[in-house]
Amino acid sequence: MSAPALRIAVQKSGRLAEKSLELIEAAGFRIMKGANDLLYRVENAPIDILRVRDDDIPTFVGDGVADFGIVGRNVLAEAVEDGARAPVEAMALGFGRCTLKIAAPIGFKYANAHSLAGLRIATTYPRSLKRFLEAHGVQAEILTMRGAVEVAPRLHLAQAICDLVSTGATLEANGLEALDTVLESEAVLIRAPKGVQAQFAALGESMIARFKGVAASRGAKYIMMNAPRARLAEITAILPGADAPTITPLAGREDVLAVHAVCQESVFWETLERLKEAGASAILVLPIEKMM
Ligand code: PRP
Ligand code: ZN
Image 1 (cartoon, rainbow, N blue to C red):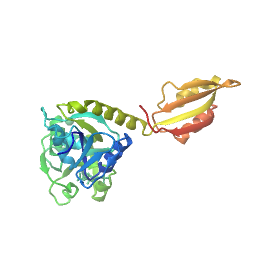
Image 2: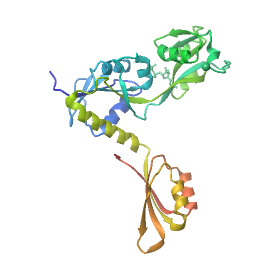
Image 3: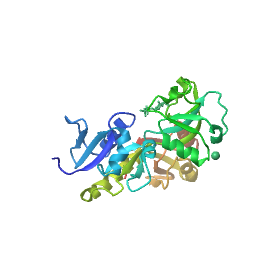
Image 4: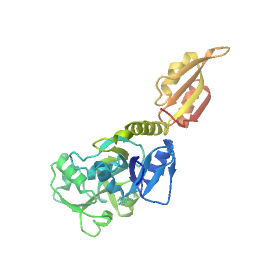
């Protein structure tokens, strides 16, 4: 019998597996990879990590076997039947971005979803495709496959496909082009519909707050510079995604101020060049390790 713990279901192998563990570690939870490959323990908090097939994660969380899960929104959307056992999306995690798309052989004449009327479309995402077609009032046949849908058009099994696209390499290798978007996906944190086990509710809240901090600090930078007082407004307007910079006087300098700001977006060389042109000097861009 194992000790009671907060349980998080993550993908055992696949596109989100490694990054899900990295997120948990970045939130300060030290993962112990023991002999049991299906269950990892956390050393410094009562948390168990269940490693399962991603298609099973919504079921585990929906039934409350796990309190939380990390899964692609595409998998969640495909699994969710409305009702009491539908997991709740607690937050988007900002990694594992991909898109569920309609694609067909290059040259296919596509104006909009109605161009699919009467065709047969192969997919491993029948529910998502059905919702897409229904939303447009389009009648088409859905061919549900277990994988390798990209070969369906070549085998004349279907005229179009609905599949996940990340880099686009799979479509290109199969002479297909993307025509429309069914769903924008990324990794999401899902929560049991009945809520987290009562004794771990506070731990769950703190875990979410830490995940939010990790997600926010990704790509964010701390930028420092000296700016001529006369051009302060111009310079702060250039800073990407920074609200309320800190402005402090410099000892012995009436005309120059120090500007410090957290930039939510990447700081590119072009931005630095524009800052210099506006009179900024001694510009430093620093990574942010944690943010809360
Ligand atoms: C998806 C999809 C494609 C591929 C697209 O499969 O079915 O095969 O990724 O990626 P690309 O645009 O970078 O080429 P995935 O690897 O997720 O495996 P799955 O079919 O088991 O979900
Ligand atoms: Zn339409």
